[in-house]
Image (cartoon, rainbow, N blue to C red):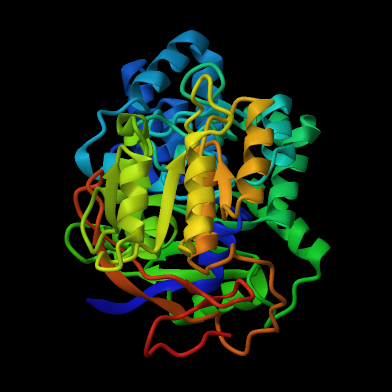
Length: 478
């Protein structure tokens, strides 16, 4: 089953290439964590400071208190009862996570963003509080890959989550002086945020763009880049109920392509979760591999197949058309099958290395030598131990015998499988200025992810230059 997605192809490309950062705001966890005014009211009430005539109540006692009033109220509470304020804040922002929010969190963590940064200090997303070692790790490490294990393992939080405004309790940035110190006294914080915004594509999730401090940094970056109306977006935002004129304003003057949804659809903000699910289906490791290998015949040769359970589940679990994987314990049996003209030829073979004491050659070497002697043409990928110095020598030996590649870890094997079936990694491409409000969405197939329990969507294709192309019947995007 196919339909068009609302996800721009350029956003998908940037995520798969490891050059997209998720910027998570309060809207992401709003269903379980109180908004700022209600949060401060609850804390003030617990501290006995919500009575008639109290300074805190006078600052907050209207439907939409200004940001200055909110910061001032938080400052008064913090000044009056420093420890009690921190304890109350910690309780308020440590919610029980329901199934909807848990699924949303897992979707986010399994999308291969190069980093996830958040201004939230609640406990929905665990991560590292912003500091110099964290900035260095995010900005200087090797780019993330769609195949990295953190994006397909079950459970846990991403090591790439950065909590810009601290976490619940001692480090939370909530009061007026906190913001002033964070933005103007700590030059590293502002430099880090500017660097991300200037060098990565940003996807805003649950962000209202009312934070004056973040908006100031965004404006500095747009001025630095010389953004002009009609330029390709430097950022995207999944946002609700944004009018067409405001979408156009964001695209032309803020460099943000808005991916809009209707928040009135029941249940509330279902559109957000549907869009996040689509994005997950277009970029997540499991979805990529299933779409890549669906219908392929794979012969997997390993005397100890249990060693492969960890990654094999990524290839075989879930809905949709899966690869047809035949596992054999014996290389001799595999050779006999490949020699038999009446047997269907696999699209590829994965073999272990198979060092045997007392033998000059490994099982994989003897296997590939026999294939060459018999003229059996089938691509072979060797999956061997990553330990050095053996891995480098074994890989060289495998390549000399005609192996397509030799890999020591699951992410490297997944990358090799992608190259083998003819879809190179996404490469940077020169984009011309857009004449409209962004590029086209992609066509998608429905796929069920067993870890998430509901449908997500994908169908991603690349041309030989590494550019994303839409599926059959879809118009080519700009």
